Image (cartoon, rainbow, N blue to C red; front, side):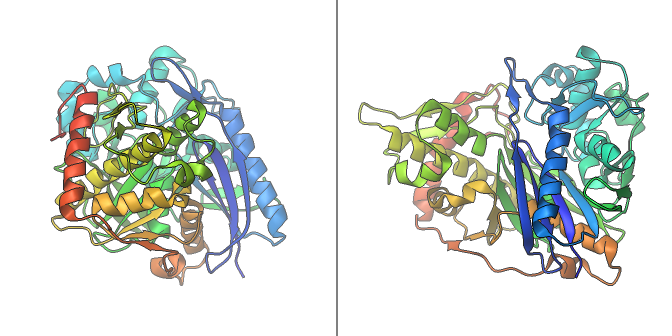
Length: 478
C-alpha cells in the first residue's frame, strides 16, 4: 500500500492528510493561521508561521497515521508572494496574500498593456495575481533576494529545489499560457525581467527529497489549490465544473487541451500538467466567502460558522447583501468595490441579514456559473462543491436555487490535498492513468433547485443591481 503525505497550505490554515491508494485519509492534522488585514487593502502572513504550520501539520499527520509515507505532495495558495534570501532561505518580506489590493497602482500604471497581458496570459490585469504584488514588493519593501510565490519558498526549505509547478505559474501574469513558459515580454511589462525565476515543472514531477517528516522521501504532487480540488472532484471532461467554498469561493470548469480565452470577464489558467499532457480551465473568483462569514461572526451576527443554518431566517424578506468586503473579482474586477446590505427595514433582524449574506455569496457564484456556460457555449448541467462552508445547508440550497443547477456535495472535506495526492501517485506509479489516480466518488448529498427559474432570475437581477451600486466600474457588470 502506498501512502502520500499531502499538505494543503492555505490562507487561514495548513491542512495535512496521509492518503492511501483509494484516496481515503488515514489521518488529518490542521494548524490555524491568522492573516493580518491592514488598512489600504493589505493582507499579509508571517512566512515563518506558514513554514512552521507545514512542518507541524505534516509531522502530526504522519505520526497519527503510523504508516510509512512514500511521497510528500504540496498544494499552495497560488498567488501569494514573498521576497527571500535564496542562500539562506530567510524571508525578506511578509507573505503578501492573494487578497491583497495594494498593487492596484502597479496595474493602473500598465493599463495600456492590459489587452496584451490578457491575450498572452488568459488572465486579467489585476492585483489578485502574482506579478503586480511582486512588483509592489520590489518598489516598497526590498530589492534583495528573490521574489516568488510561497510554494517555491516552501519547496526550497523542504528539499532545496527552486521550482514552481505550471498551474501556479499560470496564475502569475508573466507566463505565456499557450507555451507554458515565462514570457520575456510580460516580465518586461512588470519590470521583473532581471529577476531569477524558478524552473517550471509538471504537477507529477519529482523535484527532490525531504527528511522533514521522517526518512527521505520524494517531493512531488505540486499544484495550485483550486486546480487540485478540480482534479479531486474528477472534473476531467470538458464542461465539468466545481466550486470550492473556502476563504473565497472559486468556480473552475475544465476546458481540455486548449486555453480558450474568456469573453465574459473570467480567466483562463493551466489546470495541470500530468503524464506530459497539459489541461486548461476557466475560472471565476469570489474574494470573500468564509472570510465574509468570519466578519459576520466578529460582528456578532452569528456565534460561529456551525450556527449559520440555525440563525438564518427562512427568507431574507427583501434584504440583499453584496459581500464585497475585499472588492469584487470576476466579472467586475473592481478592487474598490465595497460591501453592502440593502432593502432593510425596522423588521429586519440578524436572521434576515445572515440569510442575505449566504444568498449574496451564492449569487456571486451563480453569476460565475452563468458566465462559465457562456464561455463554454453550453449550459452547465451540475455543479460539484467542496470546502468548509458546504456544511451550511442554507448556502447550498441557495446555490442550487440561484444557479438553477443540481449541486453535488463532494464526500470529503479534503478535496485540495486529495488532488495533490493524486498527482503524487502518478509520479510514483507509471502504470496509473489520471482517472485511476483520482478514483470515483458519489456525492454525499445533492441539492436540487426549489425556486422557479423566474424567481431565481428576479432575485439575481436585483442582486446584480445592488452589486453594480457598490462597484466603481460597470465593466462586465450588466
